Image 1: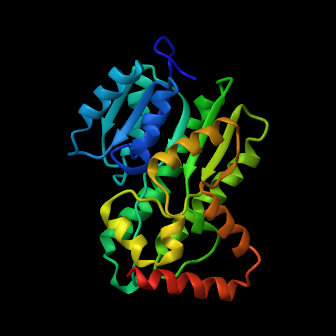
Image 2: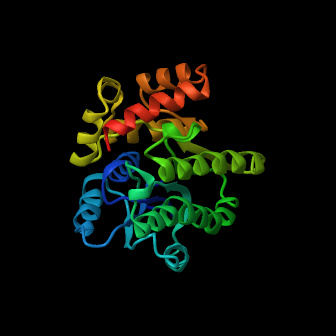
Image 3: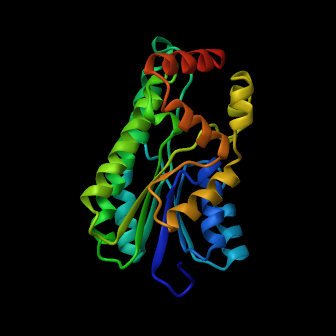
Length: 265
């Protein structure tokens, strides 16, 4: 745990809204000093001020777009210059899509790859050496429940989340003797905005009963991260779905997911 007199900070990317927004509140409630990365143009200063006033923690932030190639280095240099010791790194920023691959916009595809893959990887690479020198450190990368299998109509998004899962698992093995604990968050459907809520409703009964609030996901994730759990899977229904799908032949699983996500297109 961090506090007002501590030099240690929890860095959370994608703190503008959704899960990242709630992760910031959850960590602040636990006494963590925060270094938050948010998208431009969303009045983020007010949110940072509320966190400081409500929880009595230090909050620093940068309003930057992590799809830009130079942003991770700017974030790292800012933290170093201000003496912010990042002992918890939460790579939450990401975006996705639902729909036919051929209908995807090239710019959106590039942004998704830059954010979900490149930014997460470079942020980890930049901060990990410093984190190794701390007596207790955590890296939490946000993946997806669907990272374990290809998913039609979410082709690029799920492929990026598979990378996140295997990347984190590999780091966990490579740094098994270090002080850093690695976790990957594997949520199912999370109601982060009205558009996502509509897609969940279109997905049918299974989508509705398995959907979670970002508040629940944030609280559960931080609890499990602190305990050092590797694969964090919030929600009993999602855990059940995963356990059942593990026994299904891949062809049947691909058919089911194709039918589900075709409805949301």
